[in-house]
Structure formats: C-alpha cells, structure tokens
Length: 440
Image 1: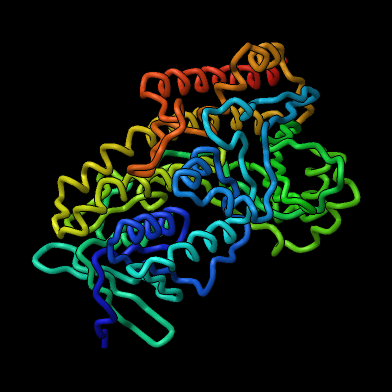
Image 2 (image 1 turned 135 degrees about the vertical axis):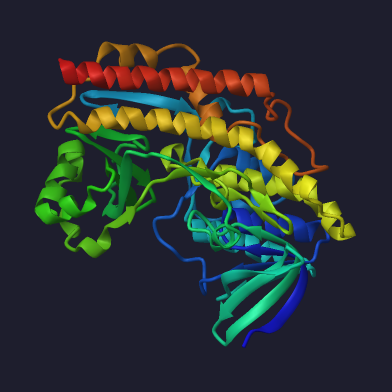
C-alpha cells in the first residue's frame, strides 16, 4: 500500500545535470524543492563529461566558478581530428565570449556532487537518493505528484509541480503519455576506457578512417574512447570477436598499440544507442519535462548536457516566483517550451546533418584520403571560432536571473542562426567530401 511520503512545492524527477541545476536554482530562489534520484550515488561511467564555456559562465554568475575549478579536470582549448591522412583543428575556444575559454573535462559525478553539496546549504532543498519514480498521481485531471519506490517500499510525493529530468527513458513522460517525435539516427557509440600516455595527441573529434570514427577524450591517465558504428551493428561486431575489434581500433589510432590488449572482455565495452527525438508538447497540467526527457540529443559535440542545463536555467527563471506564489499555469509551462524549443530544433538539425557524414564513412571500409574540399573548409578564416561558439556557447544561452553578465555572451538570435547556418554548411562540405573520397 502506498503511503504519503512528503509534500513539496516542486518535485524534480532525476538527479542528472538538468535536475541538479534546477534543484539548486529553485532552492536558491526560496522554492521548496525535492529532487529524487533512483540510484544510491551519482557514480555512473561513460556519461557526458564535458562542461562547456556557457555552463562555466553560469557557475561564474552564481559565484561558484573558482571553487568548481579547484576540482580535478582537464581544460580543452581546441578540438580537432584526423580524416584519413589529414589532421586538422575544428574548433578554437580561446575566443568565445565567456570567462572560461575552454571546455572543462570532468567526470559527471564530480559535477553532480558539487551541485548537490551546494544545494544542500539552502533550507528549502531536499535530495532523496534511491527514490525511483514509478508513476504519476492525478487529482481532477491534473498531475498532483509522483509515485516512488524506495528501499523501504512504495511511497508518494505530493507536489504543486512535477518536473521530469529523468532522461531519454523518462518515466514521467511515459506515464503522462506525452507524444515523442523520433528522428532516425544511423549511428551507435561503443564506449570504453583505454590507457593514455604522455604525449598522446588531443583528438576529441576523432580519427576517421577505414569505415570507422574513433573519439578519444583525455581523462588524464586514460582516454574515454568512443567508437562510432552503424546503428544496430553491435551484435555483429561481437560475433567477429575482440581481436577484430582491437585491430579496428589500431587501424584508426596506431599509437594505441600495446594498450588495446587491455580490452579483453565485452563487459568493458558499453553500448550507447544514439537517439534524436523531442516531445511534441513538453507539459501537462502539473507536469513539465526538460533536458533529455523533453529532447534526447546525439553525443555529437557533447552539447546534450549543455542544452539540459540551459533548460534548467530557463525553467528556474520563468517558474521560481510563480512556484513560490502558487500560481503556476499551463501557459507558463508552455512558455518554457516556447523559449527552449528553438535552440533544441537548431541543434538537432545540425546533429542530424553530421550523422549523414558518418553514413558516408561507413560505406568506405578502406583507407580514406581527405579530399581538398575539407582541407579548404577548415582553413577558411573564422571557421574554427564559429564552430567553437556554436559548440561552446550554443544557441540562445541562458543566464541566471539578476546576475551580472559578461558582454557578448548573450548572442542574439540572428547571430546564433547565422553561426548555425555556417556549421550546417561545413557539415555539408564534410559529407560531400566523404562521398567524393568514396568515389575516388
């Protein structure tokens, strides 16, 4: 039998980046907020480890940046890759209009622990670990709370507003029967760890050759590696065996010879089934979904976390006062979607175009020769700054309400659209380049 556990103004379902940032901001604004997380801690491997300049800017606005940067992390001021025999730089973050002109690479659990510890300093904040949302409760057709499963059995959290931040497999959106618009994705990613040596190249965008794309993210003494493969091909890869898997890695990154042998069990390799989707409607009376629960992103560019955090900031800015005053309306929930859907659509369109380039890579299992179009495109003046701005700052960056802002960060929509159009054009050149290489 389910018993009432507690009452709260706002119940945030999911303790990921969107949920923890939203919980912090609402508590900071004096809202009685409870964040529930189904796991006992935040330690999960192969989650997004990138903290973008716009997120670091939010921490600056909150007065938390100096403290945050004391945590162990790596600073990525530029990213590049290798296509065939051609090494290039794709983005240069040294000129982004933000206090931190780099992407911070940090295990996500450190980021979440940092936010949760600061949130706990506010008396109106509660974090309930090992509280798994199993459904929603309703009163007079309106969502009135969350049914949860805890270590002690079933319980219920009553709330004026439930906000789903529970990821791409969201229980809240499923329970509310919100319609999901799916967009086909031709890739999956196989994540694994591999040893790193001093002097190894920084190639976050990857090594593209022999029908594969290998991403290497510097995590200090090891790489968080991702092998981009055709959608649904993991079982076939497993059938071919670990020897073939290791050989394929060495084809793209010969400098890893002597380290790939440590991959001796398929349990070390985790499949991320890549999705791009979004809800047609992000809310119901009493319920709002944001972050991956509202729009699952591809890992391309590592921007999914950034968008989720921007969603949280916009939500807090728009709803904190109405929550305190007990006057959250359907129109206000719709306003959150109206503000955040545009950057979501633009970013997903760029990612979908990037995937087309990978489709061409998969069709050429032999050595890839980088065509001249790609070499010209990456040397066009301003391209690297443009890519860095779109990846590092994003479309319509949000700010903490009332905080001082760095001039220039709040890029107007016209500039954002122009930047994204430039990225889309660059992606189109890359796709065309891959097709030309295949034909030659």
